[in-house]
Structures are given as C-alpha cells and as structure tokens.
Length: 478
Image (cartoon, rainbow, N blue to C red; front, side, top):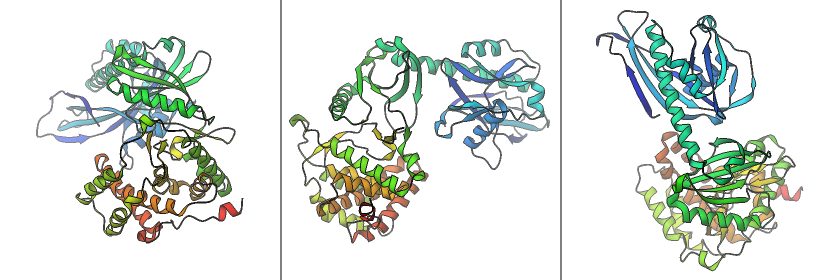
C-alpha cells in the first residue's frame, strides 16, 4: 500500500523498546458526505477503525471495527486501498517504549442497514457515535480540536491530514466529469471498482431515476475509445440485453475522453450460478451461447479486418513463458501441443469478439435473462478464441453452464475442428497466464498454476482435445 505520509515526534530514545499496533481504517463516502466516528466527550472526528488482531488480516479487521464502532456493514468486495500513515511517538504506558502504528486506510462501501454498536469501555466513555457529515465540517471540527493528551493530539492531526487528502481526491475525481453537459441532470455519482480496466468507472443516477455507467479514459486513448463506442453501437442493434451506448465525448477540460452507457441491473452471473440447479445452470449457459453467436454475427467492416493472425503473437508469448523462471513441471506436453497445432487457429472467418466473455461480465437479470457488459476488450479475431476462458474460469463456477454455452453456440452440432483449436487456446493460456500473473504477485501466480494443472488433467495432458468435463448429457435431458 502506498505510504501517504509519516508522523514521527522523535520524542523517544533510540534504545526504547518498540510496541507495534497496526490498524485498519475505513473511508466511507456517501455522495457528498463521509461517515465518521464522532466523540461526544472529546468533540473530534475519527475514521472508523482500530487495531488489527493477531488472527486477522487488514480487511477482516476493517470489517469488524466498522461494525463495532458505527454499526455499518462493509461490503467486502468493495474494499480498495487508499494509503497508509506511519505514526511514531513515545509510548503512553511504558516510559521506555516507542509506539509505532501503521494505519492502513481503505475506501469501502456499506450495506443499507445499521446494526447495534459494540463499543469497548474506552469507546463508550468517549461517546463514540456515527455521524455523516461533509468533509469540510469534519475538518473544521478537527482543526479546532485542542487537548493536552499527546496521543489524541497526534491521532487527530493524522485524521485531519487524511481528510484533506480525501477532499483533494474527491475534487480531482469530480473534475473528471463535471464539464459533461448532462452532468447537471445527475443526482448521484458513485465509483465502480469491480473488474479490471484502465478506465475510471462510475455509476450515475439521474434525476429521473435512470442508472447509467460512465467510463472515463485518458485523452490519448480517444481514437481507441471512439472505436469501442462504435463497436458497442453495432452490438446494440442485435436486440440483446446489454450496456447500450448513450453519449460520447471529451471531458476534464479536454484531458479525458468519456462514454456513457446504460446500466444493466441485476446480479453478477458468477455469483448466482453456484446456487442454481444444474439444469438452470445449463440453460443459462445456452442463453450465453446464443448471445455470443449473435455478437459474432455482426458483419466485420473491411477496414477492421486485421492484416495477419495472432499466430506469431501467441508463439512469442509462449516463448516468454518458456524463458521465464516460472515454468511448471510437465509443461512440455502443452508447449508442444501449441506448437504442433498453432496453424489450426484462425481457420474460420474472423468476427467482432466481445474479448472477455465469461460469467464475470454477464449479469443475471430479475426476469432470468442474461445481460452483457464490459466490451472494452473487443477486437476482431478467431470466434473460437472466446471459449478458452470456460476452462480458465468457467468450470470453477459451473460445468453445466460451460457445456450449455458450447452446445447453444453450435446449435448442438459441435465441429471437430473447434475442439482442436479450443485446446490450442487453452494450452497457450494455461502457460502464458502464469507469466502474465507475475506482475500481480505470488498469490496470482499460484492461482494460474492451479488452473494450468487442472487444464492438464481435463485434457489428459493434451492427448485429447475434448475436455473430460464435457458431456452431452445435459442436452439429452433438456
């Protein structure tokens, strides 16, 4: 986590023992206000949060502390880093101790409920209560705070500085979109943090109650984003439930480019699938397959057709994996399968791809239908390439769904060459994804290694091109 600043009073001796008490603190922004702890006794504001127990990680501590101090329930998936503050000063219990505290600040969202506080004796005596105020109001109160207690004085100095940084961040964020003409009609704007994207995303609610998605990018991506908007406009003619185009232009004083799309209401399909029956999962997979087939039906403009294929690129990526220190034992079979069969990809006409088609980018709507979101990875390419993520991510959620998507896409008559080509993409992705994950750390590397091992098993060390999990039993029992 990025260090925001340090507060070091240097009022201790270098020989003092060090008492460390790391803490997690929540930044809960609610439209133009912020949720804070207010001490009725001391008359100051602080961020909800406190010490991290030995059996907790930072996020677990954050969730617990927010619930205890202000009765708010943090949405775990909404937690994202803001920054840390290191505090050092003479201990207030032992004369020969230096107090060191790394404070980890996280932005987070909360559920629309308030539960009972669970204050300890100190917090109860201080009169801790939830207050939702503007950042300026909180800063004014803390700026006026005076006390002889050195610990409280440093704490409030820290909170005041963090409030100032949040105010700057909020103002900078507003500047991104404040000059969009339709912004005057917006009732609320809330950051969207789920998913991986270079875009900054916001959920807009208009004065008429309509929900929209705002995506903002750097102006140097203007041409790419304009083309993306044009492609989304093509997809919108298909009559499928999706994020439909509404508005495109520049903002932030010409430093950014934006697009506004309709918001698809519902739940992420990836969170819904595991709780459904196998038949329901299979039928949703068939829905997804039909939708993908429609997306691929859009005629490709001649100017959008690539001059070459991805064969060279795939082999280059495979070489990067082979040359890395991340190779896994037994990978030779997958490497050789790719090299032996690479000329079989792009054997069917190129199409407009969604580019990232999996349950994480599909929405389960209230009527049981599927909506499609996040077209920002679109490209023109091999239609069969869209399926390898079923092995990478889909089978972990629902094998019936994966089977249904394949069955419906091919009208229940799957060509043999599909299986061969799909296995090439799976073998390639299984290995290169390990190298790709290196930038994110060991946890992500381990996850990709696990998926690669599973792919090796599913494809019998790539001696077969049809995965073990595929069966036509669901189709027969429809």
